[in-house]
Amino acid sequence: MTAMYEENEARRLSVQAARRLLEAGLTARTWGNISARVAKDRFVITPSGLAYETLRPEQLVLMDLSGRVLGGGRPSSEKGIHADAYRLHPEVRFVIHTHQDNASVASTAGLDLTPSHPLLNGCVPCAAYGMPSTDRLRRAVAEQEKQWPESPAILLRSHGALCMGASMEDAFAAAEALETVCGEFIQARLGHLPRSRVPDWGVSQRRGDAFILTRYGRRTAFAVRAERHPLAAAIHAAIYQNSVVQYIAHETAPEVILAGRRGVTMRPMLDDLAQIAGVDIRCAGASPGQAAAALRNRNAVLLRGAGALCTGMTEDDVLAVRAILRKGCRAWLLADTVPSCRPLGRIDAWMQRTIYVMQYAKKKNSQ
Image (cartoon, rainbow, N blue to C red; front, side, top):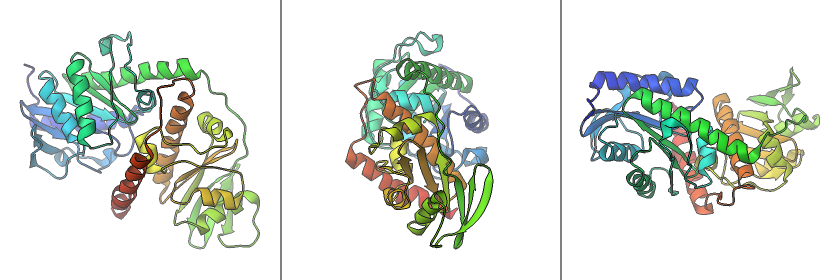
């Protein structure tokens, strides 16, 4: 059996891996989780809700394979999936669960991939869908691990990926290889997404009863409740009047523009889109009333042929919505060419959005 990590080394490597995942664009914020084995039946895992940028080794949580916390705070909610990985793979010492872009999008197809990449051992199985942090998801992942014991990577349908290795380097290499393979899968079906020129609807920040709108590189201050505004400012003003958000940003990635051109409501194909943006993403014309109404209880609205507006309480929140929306729109477009792709169930989407808004978002904004 592979020698275990000494606990201090496991903690250090887990934090190092977190930083590397951020730098490589394989994760963002607190999305996903990382663990390292320190004994046959023990591992350390990243805690729930702490940003990777500031994570310290002593903040990791020590656990055993039964799920008992032996030291530290609150562990990641997907701790059971990590425990099963160590239980089913005695040689594994490091586990990474990510919501990396290409793997997440490809996972919506629910298909096992058969890549030729040497690090992936001929198959990347896809676990059946289960809501995050549920026994259903845990069982689905374990089932694929038993069926494909040689595979270092597993797709989690409409959610993300699990990557394993005998070392941090091995697990990280599997995550990178998986992202490459899934990118090729998507590219083969979507091809090149053309860039389109659209009007700049601006980026703004609320400041009390006013907001600063930046369009085409020019910053202008507007009163939230003034009677007359230019159209772009009027749209931002209407959103601020009808919500508590503090930031608004226009997103113009090609996949977002293409999704908006359909002129229909987009149902989430991915868990994190439902959680962070809304139970569905409505499409509106470029009018203040339509945009504000479509954003009610949501943090993104598609604009017909012009991208989308994304909102949040902080600038970081808006960046997260924009990133998730780009990923979600690619998944929505992929469904045109892969019949097995399907959106989340409406009840699942509603439950996840509710939990996120009531628990995680409030907890983050109170820190």
